[in-house]
Amino acid sequence: MNNSYQVQGDLASEKSSEAYPTMVLCEDCVANHEVLVDEGPSNEDCEDCGNSSDE
Ligand SMILES: [Zn+2]
Image 1 (cartoon, rainbow, N blue to C red):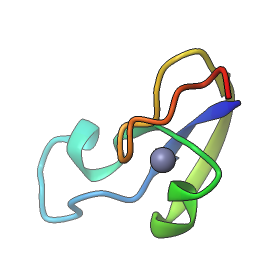
Image 2: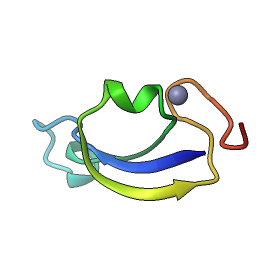
Image 3: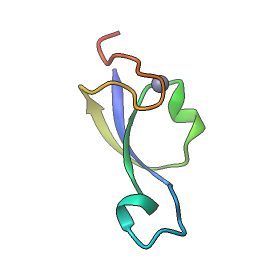
Image 4: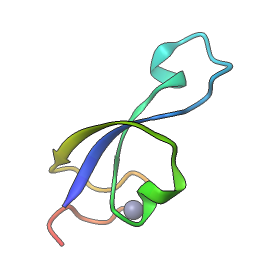
């Protein structure tokens, strides 16, 4: 099961959507990001490695 996370992105950006983007990540890839908010389970594939949420 993948989860949706709000992560720390490009803090130099004036757009909040880029400074604090929401990404769908698997358990492996989430370790590579600074997680601010765990928004819970998602049916989408991991945005980093493409892992399916079904596995
Ligand atoms: Zn992944």
